[in-house]
Length: 278
Image (cartoon, rainbow, N blue to C red; front, side):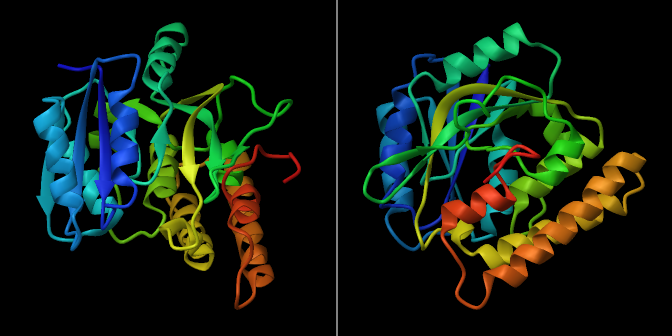
């Protein structure tokens, strides 16, 4: 049984999938399995993923009819055998020391359910921008109140395999299924720890799912509202939820019909520490 199960949901990802899987092969910690879920792709995604299963037995390919990212995650995590699930989209990259550093964090700071890291935004020209700059990035635990205000950078985030069953998996009718998952997990008592070291790349593209900022904000509002209505929040968490909903609604108004720069919006709504300046 491997320590890490890396789940890669892939839909029409032939342009980026090889880079993602090559980075997994390059990990300095080899105690992993990788489950690629081809979510009904119509391009060469499945064939490309299958070629990696021939190269290394740690890769597995699961194919299914298109169910969206949440459905692909549910299939992949359901097939996982590792102690820790690591999530990685088919256009993102785990840097070569990612698993080794996350494994060390799990051992050094035990007892948490979710571990995430710092990372970079990867632009189309190959340049990188640090998500949490010096002075902001620090190893710390984020509370539910923090995550209600602004979600942590979650590319390459690792979580305890049993948490998936406790939460009930990912919502398949939710645009921002990852943020919704973290909120529900933490509302049920899951704890989080962030590693300050940048260990992953999040590709920025105008065609990627997260570039649809209007749907992302609307999904956030829906997820936060559902958690607020769950009866699980403390008074301070409930106030944070109300603020977060107002903040997302304000961003929607500012977005206008065209939208704005993806990185700026990500910093405003999803990837900044509470109280810091975008």
